[in-house]
Image (tube, rainbow, N blue to C red):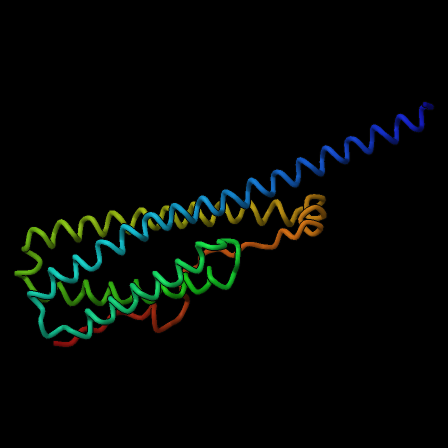
Length: 197
């Protein structure tokens, strides 16, 4: 073997090792997105379990607030349906956007529910309700942290898949851009909650 063949084989080996490393890095980052969504899913499940208990305790005090309960229950169901869509492939943008929108609807419904609860002093004083609210607040903080972790993992993956020369491997093997979870931006959802009694 002459020197030029050795140089060509060496360069070929370096390129091959780099390509394998880039491919494996993209796989690892994509799996981190799946893991990050699994953490969100755990917290959402915890929230789904808490909301019906919270609503049931409040229902005995606020019998005439049926619309508020129905709104929270319907929004919870929307988030559950969107979550199930995302579970199958957290890298698809459509289900992630749907989950973000459903989360916004649930947050709005829960905000209205909390504001309505403030009008019932006996409900605010109920020990079980207080424990549930504390647990829900704690869970919401964990959901927010899990969302941040998901978006960080998504950003790392998107950066790796879009930076040259790794973008060549990403395009060859079909690594598509992953969607981040965004807060809803509708003006109606960001408007202050109006409560009338």
